[in-house]
Length: 118
Image 1 (cartoon, rainbow, N blue to C red):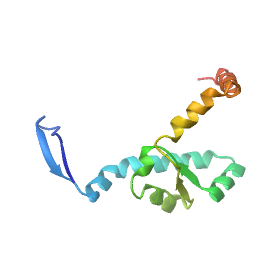
Image 2: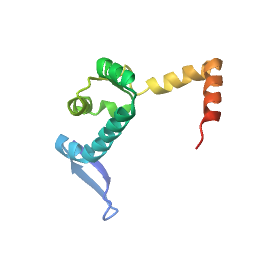
Image 3: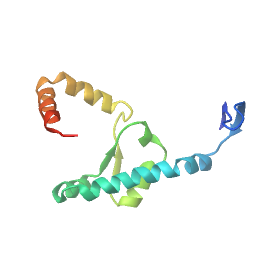
């Protein structure tokens, strides 16, 4: 794919051709950071919840989960099946909107927030 942008060294506009290998190389470090975060969370997860996650899998949301092969990378490194949520780009916003419409949920979250110490 041909892309246009500003060369950070010269500040001038530039046209480049990038391929999937270039993209994979650029995403390697951030992908490893995501994997480290997943392992960190799994290590701190209570055993009964870990069993559910291992059985039911990990659901990915957001635009980042649409990066080709990212779900397969996580599955290969964790051994846990990974599914991409339906309408993954919007589902978090939709769920947040639904939660905001539920007054009982807001009260619970507000009470919980007051108990959390920073």
